[in-house]
Image 1 (cartoon, one colour):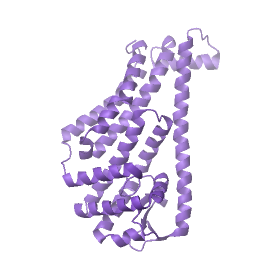
Image 2 (tube, one colour):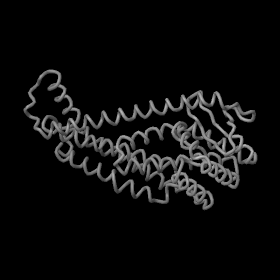
Image 3 (cartoon, helix red, strand yellow):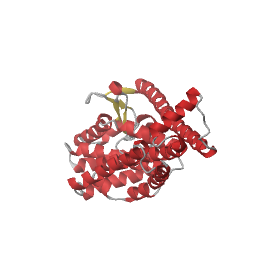
Image 4 (spheres, helix red, strand yellow):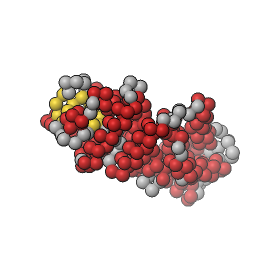
Length: 325
């Protein structure tokens, strides 16, 4: 497994810096947001697997020709007091680092989930006091707020879409339908799970470019996917106007939007708050105005094949017996 550990380390570096930087600057993801989102997930998973795998493979190299054999030998050392003389200082150090990093990632994932769920629970309690059911749409609550605000609050059977009466007064019927379809797409497509995973990934490794670029890109891509869902039944002009109106609400009520972003996952038709919201809104409106065709099927298939290959390479280097030993 000597060469496998070095190849995994090189792959981890490539997926941590040049690949996410290049993908974040590419123009094609707007033409096929679903395909691009799968690629981002593959980059994050393969990068994490390569990072941990490089340390594991290096640490286990003296006692096994692949991950499974090495882990079995390590278990014998830990559980049955087998001799540990084959492991040097740097092998033990690498194994300890891999274990600590894995524990850190899992703990951060669970901690992020706990915090999000706690915030959503508090948000639901506030909505129970301040909001009333919409007479026009099931699963929709209306809050008394002059600014145009719209967002969704995930929660399984308790998922709701929240609108302000200021928004409802500002929108025409077609525009309001576009907003509702957009928010319902966030819920039905489980976008909050993606945001949770990438938020946890960024919190665990904030110094890694992949985590920041992936979170920002995925947040923008899911907004585009929700826009596409609205376009299936509503006109482009109605959707663009709705985006502009809700974006004006996010600028006039930044504190409310920041709280919604923390609690609700996908944050309304206007994206997330602050500068990211302005960039996301501008990119979405430009995408709708430009109306570029979707990537050809062969190109999408090529990207998906590349995503699978990204996951297959580190997996093969870890588990294939004697590979590159």
